[in-house]
Image: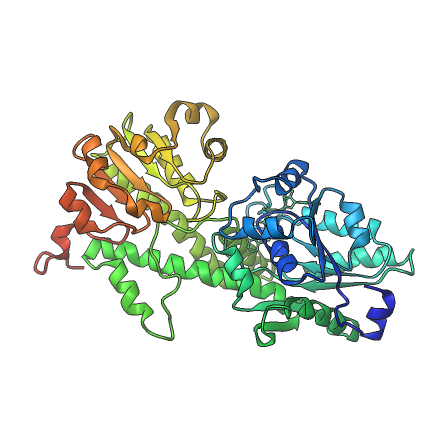
Length: 487
Ligand SMILES: NC(=O)c1ccc[n+]([C@@H]2O[C@H](COP(=O)([O-])OP(=O)(O)OC[C@H]3O[C@@H](n4cnc5c(N)ncnc54)[C@H](O)[C@@H]3O)[C@@H](O)[C@H]2O)c1
Protein backbone atom coordinates (compact mmCIF):
# COMPACT_ATOMS: atom_id res chain seq x y z
CA UNK A 1 0.00 0.00 0.00
CA UNK A 2 1.40 3.40 -0.82
CA UNK A 3 2.14 5.81 2.00
CA UNK A 4 -0.19 8.28 0.29
CA UNK A 5 -3.03 5.80 0.21
CA UNK A 6 -2.75 5.22 3.95
CA UNK A 7 -2.37 8.90 4.71
CA UNK A 8 -5.37 9.85 2.54
CA UNK A 9 -7.52 7.15 3.99
CA UNK A 10 -8.03 5.81 0.46
CA UNK A 11 -8.59 2.17 1.15
CA UNK A 12 -10.49 1.08 -1.92
CA UNK A 13 -8.58 -2.07 -2.79
CA UNK A 14 -5.40 -0.64 -1.28
CA UNK A 15 -4.30 -3.98 0.11
CA UNK A 16 -2.86 -5.66 -2.95
CA UNK A 17 -0.01 -7.68 -1.51
CA UNK A 18 -0.39 -9.82 1.57
CA UNK A 19 2.42 -11.75 3.22
CA UNK A 20 1.72 -14.37 5.85
CA UNK A 21 4.57 -15.49 8.08
CA UNK A 22 3.91 -19.06 9.20
CA UNK A 23 2.79 -21.73 6.72
CA UNK A 24 1.06 -23.97 9.23
CA UNK A 25 -2.50 -25.11 9.92
CA UNK A 26 -3.67 -21.49 10.07
CA UNK A 27 -1.39 -19.64 7.64
CA UNK A 28 -1.75 -22.13 4.77
CA UNK A 29 -5.55 -22.56 4.68
CA UNK A 30 -6.30 -18.90 5.53
CA UNK A 31 -4.09 -17.58 2.76
CA UNK A 32 -5.38 -20.13 0.27
CA UNK A 33 -8.89 -18.85 1.03
CA UNK A 34 -7.89 -15.17 0.69
CA UNK A 35 -6.14 -15.87 -2.61
CA UNK A 36 -9.20 -17.74 -3.86
CA UNK A 37 -11.70 -15.06 -2.84
CA UNK A 38 -9.53 -12.02 -3.70
CA UNK A 39 -8.03 -12.47 -7.16
CA UNK A 40 -6.81 -8.83 -7.01
CA UNK A 41 -4.52 -9.65 -4.06
CA UNK A 42 -1.17 -11.42 -4.36
CA UNK A 43 -0.70 -13.63 -1.33
CA UNK A 44 2.71 -14.97 -0.31
CA UNK A 45 3.03 -17.45 2.53
CA UNK A 46 6.51 -17.71 4.02
CA UNK A 47 8.03 -20.02 6.57
CA UNK A 48 11.49 -20.56 7.99
CA UNK A 49 10.99 -24.29 7.51
CA UNK A 50 12.23 -24.92 3.94
CA UNK A 51 10.97 -28.52 3.91
CA UNK A 52 7.44 -27.33 4.68
CA UNK A 53 7.58 -24.72 1.93
CA UNK A 54 8.80 -27.39 -0.51
CA UNK A 55 5.78 -29.50 0.43
CA UNK A 56 3.42 -26.55 -0.09
CA UNK A 57 4.96 -26.24 -3.57
CA UNK A 58 4.59 -29.96 -4.29
CA UNK A 59 1.67 -32.29 -5.03
CA UNK A 60 1.71 -33.53 -1.46
CA UNK A 61 0.72 -30.66 0.85
CA UNK A 62 2.09 -30.69 4.41
CA UNK A 63 -1.37 -30.69 5.99
CA UNK A 64 -4.59 -32.49 5.23
CA UNK A 65 -7.77 -30.40 5.25
CA UNK A 66 -10.84 -31.29 3.20
CA UNK A 67 -11.10 -28.89 0.23
CA UNK A 68 -7.65 -27.33 0.75
CA UNK A 69 -5.80 -29.10 -2.04
CA UNK A 70 -8.26 -28.02 -4.74
CA UNK A 71 -7.91 -24.35 -3.82
CA UNK A 72 -4.12 -24.48 -3.51
CA UNK A 73 -3.83 -26.17 -6.91
CA UNK A 74 -6.15 -23.57 -8.43
CA UNK A 75 -4.41 -20.46 -7.04
CA UNK A 76 -0.78 -21.53 -6.64
CA UNK A 77 1.45 -19.75 -9.13
CA UNK A 78 -1.31 -17.28 -10.03
CA UNK A 79 -1.86 -15.17 -6.91
CA UNK A 80 -0.77 -17.61 -4.22
CA UNK A 81 2.93 -18.26 -3.57
CA UNK A 82 4.89 -20.22 -0.99
CA UNK A 83 8.45 -19.12 -0.23
CA UNK A 84 11.16 -19.20 2.40
CA UNK A 85 12.45 -15.74 1.48
CA UNK A 86 11.00 -13.97 4.51
CA UNK A 87 12.86 -10.62 4.04
CA UNK A 88 11.69 -10.21 0.43
CA UNK A 89 8.10 -11.11 1.32
CA UNK A 90 8.16 -8.53 4.11
CA UNK A 91 9.49 -5.84 1.79
CA UNK A 92 6.81 -6.61 -0.82
CA UNK A 93 3.78 -6.66 1.47
CA UNK A 94 1.17 -4.03 2.25
CA UNK A 95 -0.21 -6.18 5.02
CA UNK A 96 1.56 -8.91 6.99
CA UNK A 97 -0.19 -11.67 8.91
CA UNK A 98 1.75 -13.19 11.79
CA UNK A 99 0.54 -16.80 11.88
CA UNK A 100 3.37 -18.48 13.73
CA UNK A 101 2.97 -20.99 16.54
CA UNK A 102 2.50 -19.83 20.14
CA UNK A 103 2.93 -23.09 22.11
CA UNK A 104 2.83 -23.32 25.87
CA UNK A 105 6.18 -22.25 27.30
CA UNK A 106 8.29 -25.17 28.47
CA UNK A 107 10.93 -23.23 30.37
CA UNK A 108 11.43 -20.32 32.74
CA UNK A 109 8.72 -18.05 34.13
CA UNK A 110 5.25 -19.25 33.23
CA UNK A 111 6.53 -22.76 32.32
CA UNK A 112 3.65 -25.07 31.47
CA UNK A 113 1.13 -22.19 31.49
CA UNK A 114 2.05 -19.06 29.54
CA UNK A 115 2.23 -19.09 25.75
CA UNK A 116 5.72 -18.84 24.31
CA UNK A 117 5.87 -15.65 22.29
CA UNK A 118 9.42 -16.02 21.01
CA UNK A 119 8.28 -16.83 17.46
CA UNK A 120 5.92 -13.86 17.37
CA UNK A 121 8.68 -11.60 18.63
CA UNK A 122 11.15 -12.90 16.06
CA UNK A 123 8.68 -12.09 13.26
CA UNK A 124 8.20 -8.57 14.67
CA UNK A 125 11.98 -8.14 14.66
CA UNK A 126 12.22 -9.40 11.05
CA UNK A 127 9.54 -6.92 9.99
CA UNK A 128 11.37 -4.11 11.81
CA UNK A 129 14.59 -5.10 10.06
CA UNK A 130 13.33 -5.58 6.52
CA UNK A 131 10.34 -3.25 6.05
CA UNK A 132 11.04 -0.32 3.78
CA UNK A 133 7.62 1.37 3.84
CA UNK A 134 4.27 1.47 5.68
CA UNK A 135 2.87 -1.87 6.84
CA UNK A 136 -0.23 -3.12 8.53
CA UNK A 137 0.87 -5.95 10.81
CA UNK A 138 -1.86 -8.37 11.82
CA UNK A 139 -1.67 -10.80 14.74
CA UNK A 140 -3.42 -13.92 13.58
CA UNK A 141 -1.60 -16.15 16.04
CA UNK A 142 -3.41 -16.58 19.34
CA UNK A 143 -1.66 -14.34 21.84
CA UNK A 144 -2.30 -13.07 25.36
CA UNK A 145 -3.90 -9.68 25.93
CA UNK A 146 -1.47 -6.82 25.29
CA UNK A 147 0.80 -8.80 22.93
CA UNK A 148 0.16 -6.15 20.28
CA UNK A 149 1.87 -3.66 22.56
CA UNK A 150 5.12 -5.65 22.50
CA UNK A 151 4.97 -6.04 18.73
CA UNK A 152 4.34 -2.32 18.31
CA UNK A 153 7.22 -1.38 20.62
CA UNK A 154 9.63 -3.38 18.44
CA UNK A 155 8.24 -1.88 15.23
CA UNK A 156 8.09 1.70 16.51
CA UNK A 157 11.73 1.43 17.51
CA UNK A 158 12.60 0.83 13.84
CA UNK A 159 10.59 3.93 12.88
CA UNK A 160 12.96 6.14 14.84
CA UNK A 161 15.73 5.51 12.31
CA UNK A 162 13.61 5.37 9.14
CA UNK A 163 11.00 8.04 8.41
CA UNK A 164 9.42 5.99 5.62
CA UNK A 165 8.15 3.42 8.09
CA UNK A 166 4.69 3.57 9.63
CA UNK A 167 3.12 0.59 11.36
CA UNK A 168 -0.31 -0.29 12.59
CA UNK A 169 -0.79 -3.51 14.55
CA UNK A 170 -4.18 -5.22 14.36
CA UNK A 171 -5.54 -8.26 16.14
CA UNK A 172 -7.40 -10.67 13.87
CA UNK A 173 -7.60 -14.00 15.70
CA UNK A 174 -8.47 -17.10 13.73
CA UNK A 175 -11.47 -19.18 14.74
CA UNK A 176 -11.21 -21.99 12.18
CA UNK A 177 -11.43 -25.56 13.42
CA UNK A 178 -9.11 -28.18 11.96
CA UNK A 179 -10.99 -30.71 9.87
CA UNK A 180 -13.49 -28.07 8.73
CA UNK A 181 -11.02 -25.22 8.15
CA UNK A 182 -11.98 -24.47 4.55
CA UNK A 183 -15.69 -24.46 5.32
CA UNK A 184 -15.10 -22.26 8.38
CA UNK A 185 -12.96 -19.84 6.40
CA UNK A 186 -15.37 -19.68 3.50
CA UNK A 187 -18.41 -19.11 5.70
CA UNK A 188 -17.21 -17.86 9.10
CA UNK A 189 -19.62 -17.21 11.98
CA UNK A 190 -17.69 -13.98 12.41
CA UNK A 191 -14.41 -12.30 11.60
CA UNK A 192 -12.96 -10.32 14.48
CA UNK A 193 -10.66 -7.35 13.94
CA UNK A 194 -9.25 -5.28 16.78
CA UNK A 195 -7.35 -2.07 16.25
CA UNK A 196 -5.88 0.94 17.94
CA UNK A 197 -8.40 3.57 19.03
CA UNK A 198 -7.05 6.30 16.74
CA UNK A 199 -7.61 7.66 13.25
CA UNK A 200 -4.67 5.64 11.91
CA UNK A 201 -5.93 2.56 13.72
CA UNK A 202 -9.39 2.95 12.18
CA UNK A 203 -7.87 3.25 8.70
CA UNK A 204 -5.90 0.07 9.15
CA UNK A 205 -8.99 -1.76 10.45
CA UNK A 206 -10.94 -0.51 7.42
CA UNK A 207 -8.24 -1.85 5.08
CA UNK A 208 -8.47 -5.34 6.59
CA UNK A 209 -12.28 -5.22 6.69
CA UNK A 210 -12.16 -4.55 2.99
CA UNK A 211 -10.13 -7.71 2.36
CA UNK A 212 -12.68 -9.88 4.19
CA UNK A 213 -15.65 -8.08 2.65
CA UNK A 214 -14.73 -9.74 -0.65
CA UNK A 215 -16.65 -12.76 0.66
CA UNK A 216 -17.82 -12.24 4.25
CA UNK A 217 -21.02 -10.20 4.81
CA UNK A 218 -20.15 -6.92 6.56
CA UNK A 219 -22.47 -7.64 9.51
CA UNK A 220 -20.36 -10.70 10.35
CA UNK A 221 -17.17 -8.65 10.56
CA UNK A 222 -16.85 -7.41 14.13
CA UNK A 223 -14.46 -4.59 14.95
CA UNK A 224 -13.32 -3.91 18.50
CA UNK A 225 -10.40 -2.44 20.36
CA UNK A 226 -7.21 -4.49 20.19
CA UNK A 227 -7.39 -5.90 23.71
CA UNK A 228 -11.01 -7.06 23.40
CA UNK A 229 -10.09 -8.89 20.23
CA UNK A 230 -7.06 -10.60 21.79
CA UNK A 231 -9.04 -11.61 24.88
CA UNK A 232 -12.08 -12.80 22.89
CA UNK A 233 -10.04 -15.51 21.22
CA UNK A 234 -8.86 -16.95 24.53
CA UNK A 235 -12.36 -16.71 25.99
CA UNK A 236 -13.98 -18.36 22.97
CA UNK A 237 -11.65 -21.37 23.24
CA UNK A 238 -12.09 -21.49 27.01
CA UNK A 239 -15.90 -21.60 26.63
CA UNK A 240 -15.71 -24.36 24.02
CA UNK A 241 -13.32 -26.42 26.14
CA UNK A 242 -15.49 -25.78 29.20
CA UNK A 243 -18.54 -27.26 27.48
CA UNK A 244 -16.61 -30.44 26.69
CA UNK A 245 -15.32 -30.73 30.25
CA UNK A 246 -18.81 -30.07 31.59
CA UNK A 247 -20.41 -32.88 29.58
CA UNK A 248 -17.44 -35.15 30.31
CA UNK A 249 -17.94 -34.64 34.03
CA UNK A 250 -21.59 -35.61 33.47
CA UNK A 251 -20.49 -38.74 31.57
CA UNK A 252 -18.96 -40.08 34.78
CA UNK A 253 -22.25 -39.53 36.62
CA UNK A 254 -24.07 -41.38 33.84
CA UNK A 255 -21.75 -44.37 34.03
CA UNK A 256 -22.42 -44.66 37.75
CA UNK A 257 -26.19 -44.18 37.69
CA UNK A 258 -27.61 -45.69 34.52
CA UNK A 259 -28.35 -42.38 32.80
CA UNK A 260 -27.07 -42.17 29.22
CA UNK A 261 -24.87 -39.19 28.42
CA UNK A 262 -26.08 -38.92 24.81
CA UNK A 263 -29.68 -38.75 25.99
CA UNK A 264 -28.81 -36.19 28.65
CA UNK A 265 -26.85 -34.05 26.16
CA UNK A 266 -29.73 -34.26 23.70
CA UNK A 267 -32.29 -33.22 26.29
CA UNK A 268 -30.12 -30.43 27.68
CA UNK A 269 -29.01 -29.15 24.28
CA UNK A 270 -32.60 -28.79 23.10
CA UNK A 271 -32.83 -25.73 25.34
CA UNK A 272 -32.18 -22.87 22.93
CA UNK A 273 -30.35 -20.99 25.68
CA UNK A 274 -27.83 -23.84 25.79
CA UNK A 275 -27.79 -25.21 22.25
CA UNK A 276 -26.64 -28.62 21.09
CA UNK A 277 -23.11 -27.91 19.86
CA UNK A 278 -20.01 -29.10 21.70
CA UNK A 279 -22.03 -31.35 23.97
CA UNK A 280 -20.54 -34.66 22.84
CA UNK A 281 -18.98 -36.61 25.65
CA UNK A 282 -15.62 -38.08 24.69
CA UNK A 283 -12.26 -39.23 25.88
CA UNK A 284 -11.30 -35.55 26.19
CA UNK A 285 -10.45 -32.62 23.98
CA UNK A 286 -7.10 -32.33 22.23
CA UNK A 287 -5.49 -30.20 19.57
CA UNK A 288 -2.90 -27.49 19.71
CA UNK A 289 -5.26 -24.79 20.95
CA UNK A 290 -7.76 -25.62 23.70
CA UNK A 291 -5.34 -26.63 26.45
CA UNK A 292 -2.79 -23.99 25.51
CA UNK A 293 -5.36 -21.19 25.34
CA UNK A 294 -7.14 -22.15 28.57
CA UNK A 295 -3.75 -22.29 30.31
CA UNK A 296 -2.93 -18.89 28.85
CA UNK A 297 -6.18 -17.54 30.31
CA UNK A 298 -5.38 -19.12 33.68
CA UNK A 299 -1.91 -17.56 33.60
CA UNK A 300 -3.43 -14.19 32.76
CA UNK A 301 -5.83 -14.48 35.72
CA UNK A 302 -2.95 -15.42 38.02
CA UNK A 303 -0.85 -12.53 36.78
CA UNK A 304 -3.76 -10.23 37.61
CA UNK A 305 -4.11 -11.88 41.07
CA UNK A 306 -7.58 -13.14 40.14
CA UNK A 307 -7.00 -16.49 41.79
CA UNK A 308 -10.64 -17.65 41.93
CA UNK A 309 -11.02 -17.03 38.20
CA UNK A 310 -7.74 -18.89 37.59
CA UNK A 311 -8.93 -21.86 39.64
CA UNK A 312 -12.26 -21.92 37.82
CA UNK A 313 -10.70 -22.12 34.36
CA UNK A 314 -8.00 -24.54 35.50
CA UNK A 315 -10.80 -26.93 36.42
CA UNK A 316 -11.54 -27.30 32.70
CA UNK A 317 -8.05 -28.74 32.15
CA UNK A 318 -8.20 -30.90 35.24
CA UNK A 319 -11.46 -32.53 34.12
CA UNK A 320 -9.93 -33.20 30.70
CA UNK A 321 -6.89 -34.95 32.19
CA UNK A 322 -9.15 -36.85 34.59
CA UNK A 323 -11.38 -38.03 31.74
CA UNK A 324 -8.43 -39.43 29.78
CA UNK A 325 -7.09 -41.22 32.85
CA UNK A 326 -10.55 -42.48 33.79
CA UNK A 327 -10.99 -44.02 30.34
CA UNK A 328 -7.56 -45.72 30.43
CA UNK A 329 -8.25 -47.01 33.95
CA UNK A 330 -11.61 -48.38 32.78
CA UNK A 331 -9.88 -50.33 30.00
CA UNK A 332 -7.45 -51.91 32.46
CA UNK A 333 -10.19 -52.66 35.00
CA UNK A 334 -12.51 -54.27 32.45
CA UNK A 335 -9.68 -56.39 31.01
CA UNK A 336 -9.53 -58.15 34.36
CA UNK A 337 -7.17 -55.62 35.94
CA UNK A 338 -4.23 -56.36 33.72
CA UNK A 339 -3.31 -55.46 30.18
CA UNK A 340 0.35 -56.49 30.46
CA UNK A 341 1.33 -58.38 27.32
CA UNK A 342 -2.21 -58.13 25.89
CA UNK A 343 -2.77 -56.94 22.36
CA UNK A 344 -5.00 -53.89 22.27
CA UNK A 345 -6.12 -52.39 18.97
CA UNK A 346 -6.33 -48.61 18.95
CA UNK A 347 -8.53 -47.02 16.28
CA UNK A 348 -7.60 -43.38 15.77
CA UNK A 349 -4.66 -41.29 16.83
CA UNK A 350 -5.44 -37.80 15.42
CA UNK A 351 -6.96 -35.39 17.94
CA UNK A 352 -10.16 -35.30 15.88
CA UNK A 353 -11.50 -36.61 12.61
CA UNK A 354 -10.53 -35.21 9.20
CA UNK A 355 -7.10 -34.06 10.27
CA UNK A 356 -3.69 -35.66 10.57
CA UNK A 357 -2.84 -33.32 13.44
CA UNK A 358 -1.90 -35.14 16.63
CA UNK A 359 -0.92 -32.23 18.86
CA UNK A 360 -2.25 -32.82 22.39
CA UNK A 361 -4.40 -35.67 21.08
CA UNK A 362 -6.18 -37.56 23.87
CA UNK A 363 -5.01 -40.73 22.10
CA UNK A 364 -1.43 -39.96 23.13
CA UNK A 365 -2.40 -39.80 26.78
CA UNK A 366 -4.59 -42.91 26.78
CA UNK A 367 -1.85 -44.84 24.94
CA UNK A 368 0.72 -43.57 27.43
CA UNK A 369 -1.35 -44.86 30.37
CA UNK A 370 -1.79 -48.23 28.66
CA UNK A 371 1.93 -48.43 27.90
CA UNK A 372 2.67 -47.83 31.56
CA UNK A 373 0.61 -51.00 32.13
CA UNK A 374 2.75 -52.80 29.51
CA UNK A 375 -0.05 -53.27 26.96
CA UNK A 376 0.93 -54.11 23.37
CA UNK A 377 -0.69 -51.36 21.33
CA UNK A 378 -1.61 -51.93 17.67
CA UNK A 379 -2.59 -48.54 16.27
CA UNK A 380 -4.43 -47.60 13.10
CA UNK A 381 -5.31 -44.08 11.94
CA UNK A 382 -6.34 -43.20 8.39
CA UNK A 383 -4.24 -40.00 8.23
CA UNK A 384 -1.49 -40.07 10.85
CA UNK A 385 1.89 -41.38 9.74
CA UNK A 386 3.77 -44.02 11.71
CA UNK A 387 6.70 -41.69 12.42
CA UNK A 388 4.33 -39.05 13.76
CA UNK A 389 2.71 -41.56 16.15
CA UNK A 390 6.06 -42.84 17.34
CA UNK A 391 7.53 -39.41 17.96
CA UNK A 392 4.44 -38.23 19.90
CA UNK A 393 4.47 -41.37 22.07
CA UNK A 394 8.23 -41.20 22.64
CA UNK A 395 7.80 -37.75 24.21
CA UNK A 396 5.33 -39.12 26.76
CA UNK A 397 6.93 -42.51 27.27
CA UNK A 398 10.39 -43.49 25.99
CA UNK A 399 11.69 -44.55 22.61
CA UNK A 400 12.58 -47.96 24.04
CA UNK A 401 9.04 -48.46 25.29
CA UNK A 402 7.56 -47.34 21.99
CA UNK A 403 9.76 -49.76 20.05
CA UNK A 404 8.82 -52.58 22.40
CA UNK A 405 5.09 -51.93 22.81
CA UNK A 406 3.79 -50.18 19.68
CA UNK A 407 2.95 -51.58 16.26
CA UNK A 408 1.41 -49.33 13.62
CA UNK A 409 -0.99 -50.76 11.03
CA UNK A 410 -2.35 -49.58 7.72
CA UNK A 411 -5.30 -52.00 7.95
CA UNK A 412 -7.71 -51.81 10.91
CA UNK A 413 -8.66 -55.48 10.58
CA UNK A 414 -5.01 -56.49 10.98
CA UNK A 415 -4.74 -54.19 14.00
CA UNK A 416 -7.70 -55.94 15.64
CA UNK A 417 -6.74 -59.54 14.80
CA UNK A 418 -6.01 -61.53 17.99
CA UNK A 419 -6.60 -58.45 20.14
CA UNK A 420 -8.29 -58.58 23.55
CA UNK A 421 -9.88 -55.19 22.98
CA UNK A 422 -10.53 -52.48 20.41
CA UNK A 423 -10.29 -48.93 21.71
CA UNK A 424 -11.75 -46.07 19.65
CA UNK A 425 -9.99 -42.78 20.30
CA UNK A 426 -10.83 -40.59 17.26
CA UNK A 427 -14.27 -40.07 15.72
CA UNK A 428 -13.32 -40.95 12.11
CA UNK A 429 -16.51 -41.67 10.12
CA UNK A 430 -14.96 -44.78 8.57
CA UNK A 431 -14.87 -46.47 12.00
CA UNK A 432 -18.67 -46.62 11.86
CA UNK A 433 -18.61 -48.54 8.59
CA UNK A 434 -16.37 -51.46 9.58
CA UNK A 435 -17.55 -55.06 9.66
CA UNK A 436 -17.53 -55.50 13.43
CA UNK A 437 -18.68 -59.12 13.21
CA UNK A 438 -15.52 -59.87 11.25
CA UNK A 439 -13.46 -57.93 13.78
CA UNK A 440 -15.11 -59.75 16.71
CA UNK A 441 -14.52 -63.16 15.12
CA UNK A 442 -10.82 -62.41 14.66
CA UNK A 443 -10.26 -61.34 18.28
CA UNK A 444 -9.37 -63.16 21.51
CA UNK A 445 -12.56 -63.84 23.51
CA UNK A 446 -14.12 -62.40 25.55
CA UNK A 447 -13.58 -59.45 23.20
CA UNK A 448 -14.05 -55.93 24.51
CA UNK A 449 -14.83 -52.72 22.67
CA UNK A 450 -14.15 -49.36 24.34
CA UNK A 451 -15.80 -46.50 22.50
CA UNK A 452 -14.19 -43.22 23.55
CA UNK A 453 -16.12 -41.23 20.95
CA UNK A 454 -19.62 -42.72 21.14
CA UNK A 455 -19.48 -43.75 17.49
CA UNK A 456 -21.03 -47.19 17.72
CA UNK A 457 -24.38 -48.52 18.95
CA UNK A 458 -24.07 -50.38 22.21
CA UNK A 459 -26.93 -52.83 21.55
CA UNK A 460 -25.66 -53.66 18.08
CA UNK A 461 -22.14 -54.33 19.35
CA UNK A 462 -23.43 -56.41 22.26
CA UNK A 463 -25.54 -58.49 19.91
CA UNK A 464 -22.39 -59.29 17.94
CA UNK A 465 -20.88 -60.51 21.21
CA UNK A 466 -18.67 -57.65 22.33
CA UNK A 467 -18.36 -56.54 25.92
CA UNK A 468 -19.09 -52.89 25.12
CA UNK A 469 -18.02 -49.87 27.13
CA UNK A 470 -18.93 -46.41 25.87
CA UNK A 471 -18.12 -43.12 27.55
CA UNK A 472 -21.14 -42.10 29.60
CA UNK A 473 -23.01 -45.38 29.14
CA UNK A 474 -23.64 -47.55 32.16
CA UNK A 475 -23.50 -51.35 32.44
CA UNK A 476 -26.86 -52.92 31.54
CA UNK A 477 -27.86 -53.87 35.09
CA UNK A 478 -27.77 -50.18 36.10
CA UNK A 479 -30.08 -49.05 33.35
CA UNK A 480 -32.96 -51.30 34.44
CA UNK A 481 -35.51 -49.76 36.80
CA UNK A 482 -35.25 -51.35 40.20
CA UNK A 483 -31.56 -52.09 39.76
CA UNK A 484 -30.22 -48.57 39.52
CA UNK A 485 -27.63 -47.53 42.04
CA UNK A 486 -29.14 -45.25 44.64
CA UNK A 487 -26.95 -42.28 45.41
N1 LIG B 1 -4.32 -24.94 14.42
C1 LIG B 1 -5.49 -24.38 14.65
O1 LIG B 1 -6.55 -25.00 14.51
C2 LIG B 1 -5.58 -22.94 15.08
C3 LIG B 1 -6.83 -22.30 15.07
C4 LIG B 1 -6.90 -20.98 15.45
C5 LIG B 1 -5.76 -20.32 15.88
N2 LIG B 1 -4.56 -20.97 15.91
C6 LIG B 1 -3.37 -20.21 16.33
O2 LIG B 1 -2.66 -19.83 15.16
C7 LIG B 1 -1.25 -19.85 15.41
C8 LIG B 1 -0.56 -20.77 14.41
O3 LIG B 1 -1.03 -22.07 14.64
P1 LIG B 1 -0.73 -23.26 13.62
O4 LIG B 1 -1.52 -24.42 14.09
O5 LIG B 1 -0.88 -22.78 12.23
O6 LIG B 1 0.84 -23.49 13.93
P2 LIG B 1 1.85 -24.39 13.08
O7 LIG B 1 2.85 -24.88 14.04
O8 LIG B 1 1.09 -25.36 12.24
O9 LIG B 1 2.53 -23.34 12.08
C9 LIG B 1 3.35 -22.31 12.50
C10 LIG B 1 4.45 -22.12 11.47
O10 LIG B 1 5.19 -20.94 11.78
C11 LIG B 1 6.53 -21.14 11.39
N3 LIG B 1 7.39 -20.16 12.05
C12 LIG B 1 7.62 -20.01 13.37
N4 LIG B 1 8.42 -18.95 13.58
C13 LIG B 1 8.72 -18.42 12.36
C14 LIG B 1 9.49 -17.33 11.92
N5 LIG B 1 10.12 -16.53 12.79
N6 LIG B 1 9.59 -17.07 10.59
C15 LIG B 1 8.96 -17.86 9.71
N7 LIG B 1 8.18 -18.91 10.06
C16 LIG B 1 8.06 -19.19 11.38
C17 LIG B 1 6.81 -22.58 11.79
O11 LIG B 1 7.90 -23.11 11.08
C18 LIG B 1 5.48 -23.26 11.44
O12 LIG B 1 5.51 -23.84 10.14
C19 LIG B 1 -1.08 -20.27 16.87
O13 LIG B 1 -0.98 -19.12 17.66
C20 LIG B 1 -2.39 -20.99 17.16
O14 LIG B 1 -2.73 -20.93 18.51
C21 LIG B 1 -4.44 -22.26 15.50
